Image 1: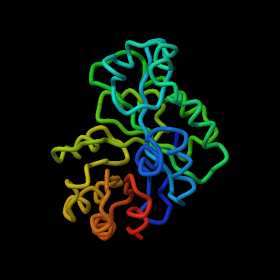
Image 2: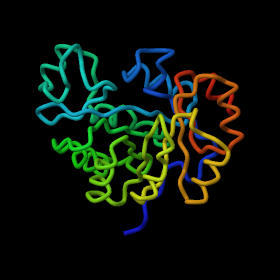
Image 3: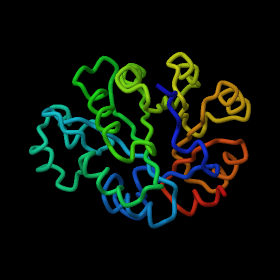
Length: 233
């Protein structure tokens, strides 16, 4: 089997992704926010995947809704609490008409969590006609290992926010590091690129910072505001 290829490998850099869609124009992680990112001319979106108790993959950032864990709720119960929530299947269907639009899915997972979400997400992406424009990221190295084991063709990224743990990506043998933008330096970008790791950084909401990051050679910039992101070009 051929090695995984990141979907932005041949794109103009930096690639610009709306963080949870475009939450400056609509509530984040909703249909309206995702379509706003399309209409703004961004390259794609980053969004978050959770799993309900009965095995439905849904788009939501936090592990909880109200005071209840999503993993403890059946999908029907979750819909009562949050009627606008989208399933992963609904998101993939929404993006079908936009074949060049990229999708970074962050799997929300806690190390040691054994509810099948890593394998289910891997299978769901691998079975989608647009799978070549998707890559999966997570803070959880165990989840990334499970995805790689299950679907070795899927490109992966390792997320970190408070310390340079980018070497974990090298140990996992994956394709990208996803550091918080304040962790990005010229030396680190050079080191990551030397190790053949793409650099996707978040959440960049200042135009000056976006331009600086582009100048450092980062591959992907994620943010909430289309105008800020476009300033990076």
